Length: 153
Image (tube, rainbow, N blue to C red; front, side, top):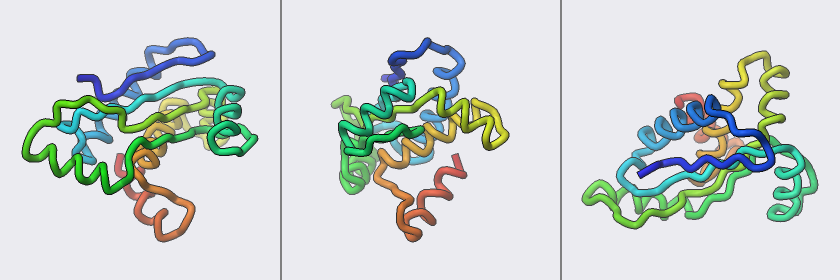
């Protein structure tokens, strides 16, 4: 079973991006003990216009952003699925969540922060993954949990 589905929407396909995303998601799934759960992550790579429209539609925020995450489970539900998968492999395939990433924004931020596009894309995937897993960074007490997990990956 594939643990990540990658879609290109309104941008050109890129095999290098696919490889980076597959490697990062593999590491995320192994680290968070999701390998036996039959969950998979849906990653959509797109442009600023699409991500802005999606942000406005689902979050009522009319602005472009770098990454959007849409979890399909509450954190407790994911914890239960992981616990169940320790005893037996879960048969039902289910989407863990969707992550939408603006590739032009990734490129722009890589230049701004002075590192590679590959590193910025990897960070966006990890950041989106942890949002899908139920983590947040708005409050300081949540940020001190989420940031070390991101840095570890």
